[in-house]
Length: 61
Ligand SMILES: [Zn+2]
Image 1 (cartoon, rainbow, N blue to C red):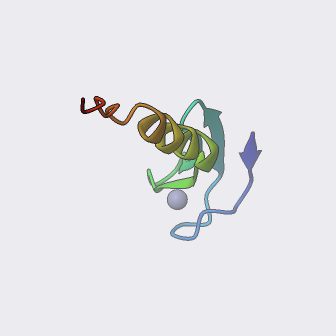
Image 2 (cartoon, rainbow, N blue to C red):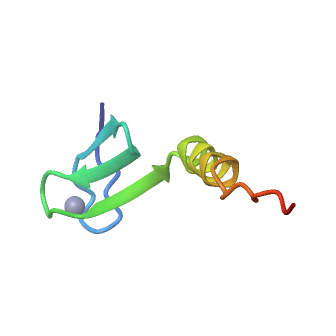
């Protein structure tokens, strides 16, 4: 998706792209680049995974 004249640096045309990591935008004219969103859901899922695989305690006795 392209946002015309929305580059904060040069008022160029900004191309917005979405991939597995989130959404980013870059300018055709000057190369300006920004990450719009770092998929927070996958980060949360990772945390939950880490928590769920904490080492199990061996029973004493
Ligand atoms: Zn630009």
